[in-house]
Length: 78
Image 1: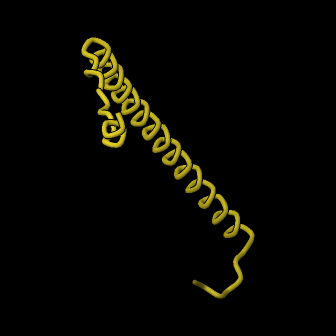
Image 2: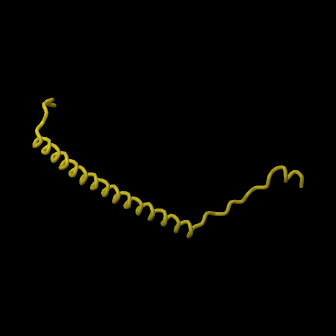
């Protein structure tokens, strides 16, 4: 970097370039955020469909009931 003081016109040009760069980067960042949002929504939709399909299958074919065995102590007393 130059250590020499810059004129007012040079400083104005530097500020304008910095502002343009920030605007371009801001647009890119917003596009990335929007793309990530779309990806999240698609993934959520896919997972919801899988969950609903599994729940429907579970309703149609419920698991067999679990039969608890009597404890050994209760069997010895009786």
